[in-house]
Image 1 (cartoon, rainbow, N blue to C red):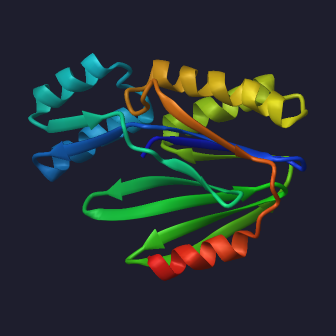
Image 2 (image 1 turned 90 degrees about the vertical axis):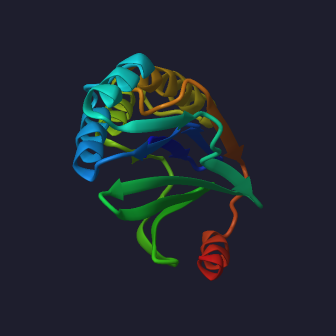
Length: 193
């Protein structure tokens, strides 16, 4: 799990997601230990990650080409994957002008967990990435336009990448100024699973 961050405004919505995916192999308890260190922020660089994985006998495969955010018919969709041991859960953020919804996908079932309205930032990620994003929002956000939100989201993604190896240095940014129907997008996804 890494970082997806969005601003839902009254005049539009914008979402960014990093592109890192890490596959782990080895003993489950060692993988859990490495994931805990990575997601809590004690592993900063890719070199630190490789060295620590080698130290405890975990194999890792890192790729920085996974698209976690997209735009479909005016709805921005971001997804993060949470792993806890063998259990895998996906959290999906749907955003459009004026509203958003967060859903959990488990065993091919999609369940909406939260809904919200305009003038909100929403952050999905691990402990360290959520903390970084929330600190940036508190320090830099004074209210404003979608352009102001972009000026906050872009450096936040870069800061996150500089302090944790769980986030890629590259990210995808999508935006919409449409007020699309979130329920339709969620219904489509729930039928796909």
